[in-house]
Length: 606
Image (cartoon, rainbow, N blue to C red; front, side):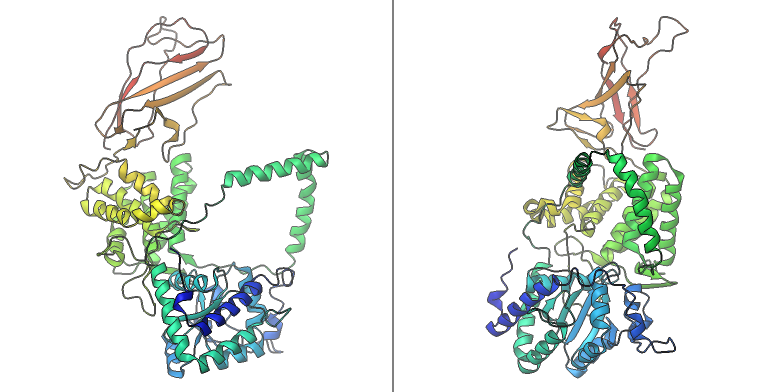
């Protein structure tokens, strides 16, 4: 969706935004080599008294986020996002300065050292604004809304996200990193503060009117309406290949092998590490985030499923039990974060969807029904709290979430999968296992709600397309007829394809046996439309032998010979398939390629 903000904004305010947008852009790119070599902890001495106590302590001292606690001794009168700060802004009719960042953001730390630790700048901030600090990992809802605002106003975004709001939380100006002082025509943060204060005092009605229009655009941008396609992410395989090619070319230019270069680099790396260990270590963020844990649980469960390494199962199960015990309330709702024995913030859609994904992964890997039951319970709660009855799909926040200017419903993948996409896929899996039509209906409505957007911007909807493929390639006729507990129905769509390589089935990597490259085996399914439980289909098996070698017949002509047998597993749970191998035929071929008669396979429910 192309956003035309200019037509909605008063010329004076538009000029102000344009000028400061220019300043923001050049300020955001300023200083890449200025502060990079500085010790991030070198400023702490200036914040302490001679006896080692802190000179300043603000309201962030009561928070659990390591990122917020990093700012607890700034001279800035920081508040966490909450009623105390918001009520004060209204009572004093002061605009709000909102700073959003996270622990691993480099420029967030630079701004903390160079700007927020400066007493003179802090005095200006405290006098003119109500200052709020947010950890975007704790409050992704606030981050999404005001990052959208900054992108609308400046055409780009990043962290730290520096946004100025009216007392009613409407954004009227935004940027990213601001340096502590003017330099080469670039505005320092004090200049920005004074200019915005002057505009607020002299043009307040205009600022509020334009902030309302900017907010309208934010609502449009976050209301799950079609938007322009995102740039296709760079293929990691291509990047890896390019890196290897570069390594090889450097090695050739130095007339050394890559191994020689690596061996020469190792002692240098060790020396660098020894030197680095003498310095204070970077901040370690130790908070637990439910949604991230859900993805991790699914990954470890998958690792156990594929490799059979019990350590992976133990990690996944331990993490799942921890989240269910410490981050679920008595009424079954999830919290967002946990640290030092304290669970905080209501869970978001991603927390429910991603944790359910992990629980379903555990059920698939272990076969234990308890994980399926927990997944069902959380999904029912998710449906109750986040479902959009009018249009389908899921909102990101609870309906009663306070102090938000919009309730967003974002279907796009980003660094993380889309919560709506993961929820839709979870619903389809549960519909299969439990036969409950409500799950299927909600998944279908979610996919329908975003169908036009998927068509317009497929690269931004990879996980939603994965769920769509599951929906379209599965037989749903039995869903809703009766419960199908522990069902492991198999739906594979072969239509329009000449053969299906069995090694490529989802979650089923297989290494076929090979003996010193004397024998290789391949198996495929001839295309005959979709395959569903109860329907037989052919499997073609092909052996390739080295010249001069042979295999025994079945049955073999001598009792001492071991007859050749070929079995094909579809990587379904045990006892999920019946197979019938046709009677063999005599062959005197030595070496080369052998085509076996088709084997009949019939997928069944578990």
